[in-house]
Image (cartoon, rainbow, N blue to C red; front, side, top):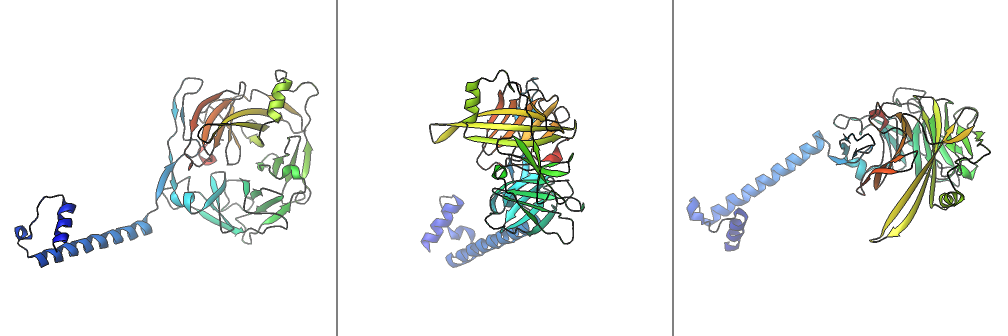
Amino acid sequence: MSHLLRRLRLSLRVSYLPPSSLGLSHMSFIFYFFAFVCLVYLQTIISQRNLTTSSRCFSYYYVRGAESWEPVSGETISVPYLKVPMELLKEIGIIGASHGWVATLKNGVVCLQDDLDLPDTDPKRIPLPPFVTLPHCQTQIVTNVSMSSSSPDDDEDCIVAVKFLGPQLSLCRPAQRDCKWSNIRITDPSFFSSHVMYSKRDETFSMPASRGHYIGSWDLGRHMKEPKIQMLRLPDEAPIPEMTEKKWQRLESCCTKQHYLVESLHTDETFMVKWYTESHPITNNTLNLWDHFLVLKIDKEGNAVYTKDIGHLCILLSKSEAICIPSKSNRKVKNSVYMLREHEFAIVMIDTNQKFCQRPFLPCSLPYYISKRLLI
């Protein structure tokens, strides 16, 4: 009994607490003490249940940049953090984002949800059919997700495309009653690691080949089994006069080379962005990354020319579908590439390839741009 009193005195942080000072015997004191502990425990359980049933747990993470920088004009722009439901980070794997919708994959089932658009309200969630894996393909590693419109819940013509690492591309219409996946086997290995983009101009899902020499396009019509192939024609003379042979060799030796197709609905232009990354190990098991961007402007006939000026546009590259938006109406830097990956955010000027406002990220950041919050 004496050791219980000592614990009680320590918990209350008093030097001496005789039961007689409260007008209680030792047994009565212990009884009321344990009754108090039980009451606190029950209140805690009830409050936790109410929290679970009536509200959702959120955490603040970097999404769509959440950056604060000083662009070339000298103006300081701050973009606040966004609230992200914890289940998106822990319980469900995010595989992509397009038109403001987040695509998640859990137990082989894809779900579209708009938690990042209005996180304080009840989110819309659209479950899609389980994936059907084609022979000699895989459906666990996703390259990216693309959508033809921002209304997969009520637009029966809206198509969702999931590009897997490897030969499989899967398409479906979520708003249709008998929604099911149409699975396409890509035979050209040049597209196995490509990122898919929906072209509103051509009404197809398009991908650049691995070296960026041609583009393949698929749809749910006549180009489902056999893609439409468009060869790109570059000028015969040196595509970029100031690029020496040594610089080209450095780009070709980069460990990572990614190609992105992107359309500007504002100017009706199509661009291909070539993102080269070179890594050098430094201390503390970290890598120093060097990035270089080349931008090609492509017309409807497939004529492609390298450009260092895309006007008052900027291109956003992340794990979402690539986006091209007007810079001024979105308070962003013109003629630039906004790069967003797991551990880094930066603005790269297209004409000089200079990096501005480089920001390190926490490992748990979400490298996605959410287009519903952007003026396209």
